[in-house]
Image (spheres, rainbow, N blue to C red):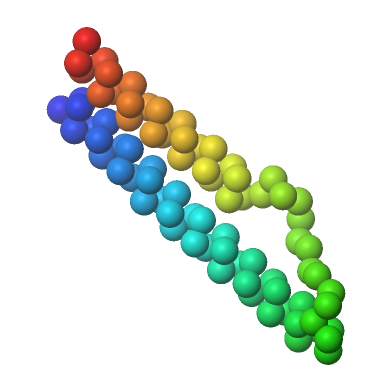
Length: 78
């Protein structure tokens, strides 16, 4: 049962990471289009916050969840 839970945690971390990355890319394109609308030439950039934002924090937590899944699988095999 622990092995199945480990595989489930790894799959969940990978799928959630893909979703977080795609939402982050979508927000970048929305910011770029807002910058184009705000300036008539589109040469200005809009920056919100810092580079260490929620997507970075979420991906760090997903790495921890994936490591927990690997730990559960390795503990079952030993």
